[in-house]
Amino acid sequence: AAAQDSPAISISGNMQGLVVGAMNASLMDKDTSDLTASYKGADCTSGYSGFSEASPLQIRGLVFEKRSIAQSTPFSGCRNTITITIQTNVPLISNIVCQPVITIQSLTSASSPSGKISLLAAPGQCQIGASSASVFKDNLTGQPGFGSWDNSSASLSLWLATNTL
View 1 (cartoon, rainbow, N blue to C red):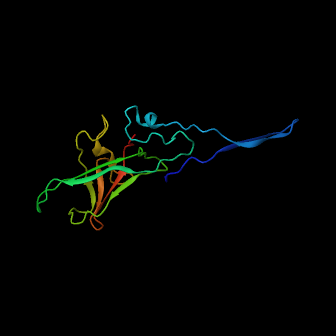
View 2 (cartoon, one colour):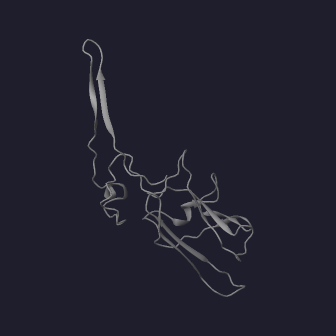
View 3 (cartoon, helix red, strand yellow):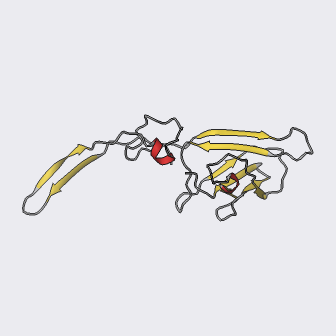
């Protein structure tokens, strides 16, 4: 979803029956407190305090707070492990109306047949009890622990397999 500020919300009403009358529209009071600690836990360090996230219809836009890539060797002909680290500012949640897919592009000169590619988990990258290898899968109904490599476009697509709450 795109980011949006909380709109001005009003309330009005009318009475029907033996007594007829109208209640004029007036602006509702909005909760302007922060929700940061309640949806990520008390140890949240995302740095978004002061954004009035309890206000109705306030939507935080998706941002990659961490996005890094590295390789294990610069030498041709050697097995090279590409390490990708990402972190979003909002939880990624997969459900019937939302299927998050992350695509990493421009991996030119990478050589692997198109299709399912195994993901390896680096220790300590996920919350306790979670495995980073099983956060993603290769397609909507795919097996966790794999991504989808497209050799012709030099891109890796990662479908969310586990919610990142």
